[in-house]
Length: 166
Image (cartoon, rainbow, N blue to C red; front, side):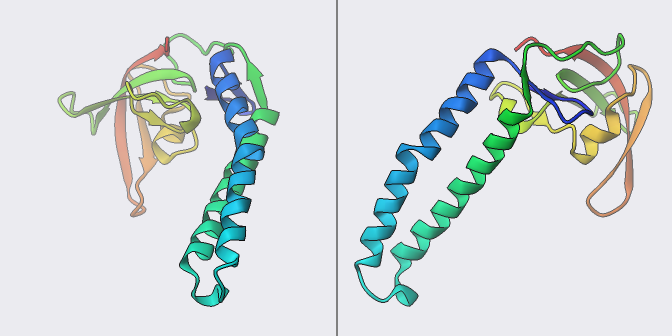
């Protein structure tokens, strides 16, 4: 899964089907299950001191947030391959290797893609993350800069940028 500047999320057919199945589960059986948990907890009495009720309501809120995220993601999704970037240019959907502060012994390799596409075999950074947005558009051999959580700037050198093959 990759994201482009037009706010389109490119998904493989497999990723699209997986997310669609998750959405169908959350809007069907999962909603029924959480409603039953809330009803059972409500019958236990005083809602102000009912931990089960509050836990079920919190779970329901998280579930509904995920439903909204998936709905928005799937509405803006295109199934297929993202448009190719220039040779060696960092773009969503690429596996990127960087060196921190130009030190080629201190490197990180990651997939630049949305978290929903994350795989256990490779670390994934969102194109909207500070590091992700800092390296997009840069070419192999170039230096890029991004902002750290403390407000300071960090620099990295782009060592490799290759399309993700899954």
